[in-house]
Image (cartoon, rainbow over all chains, first blue to last red; front, side):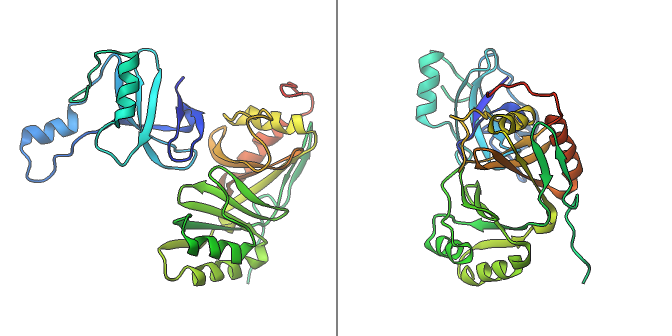
Length: 109
Length: 191
């Protein structure tokens, strides 16, 4: 079971208090984009074994969205951070590098 | 005007702890910038209480201000004075972006009282919350879930817990609490 700490209210709770919101840092391609870009935006999700970035919502708590970096193999959570960002903050990336040297995820490494 | 009644009309149950529905409670959801001087002053003037820190609740008796989220407070006041409090908040915050709404009739409130270790245990049976004395103490306020419904809990003192949930699930919540307080169901986890 995942234990997440909500960066908005500071509560550490197990995953049933949260709701997963799918992959993080997806760039939206809307009206005017090419069919390939729109298809990619809608359907092409990574499904990694290892480091992964996700969106979560503290549904039974403060109700806020946030980001989480975790390992899909061990369920280790590297950290959680604000939803108001388009890429993982450097301190989260450093924490992952310390534990999973050489990791990469989409364009981040 | 029709006579207002609470969801379970003050039902109570005696088990390893006493569970009671607390009847009509005045509740106001207040949203806005909690750090702003206007908000602090409006809350102080309306309730006499300071805006609590993150994850905490201020107050006593039937007068509380609870920290719900980074931009939301729950004010608990007497049911009869809720309209006045709401009006004074709206008046005081008229110049700043905010939301103040009377949610009294959409909520239900319960009190568990008795042995401190057993009230903690009854809540721990239902909520994924660390109820050890070193992890949860009077003054803290925790929104979580109680079995399948959202609920918020706090401890007015070491021997009681108060629970706020939606009125629509009041009967479900009361049945849960009765189960958790059933005679002979002591686990003695905290004693």
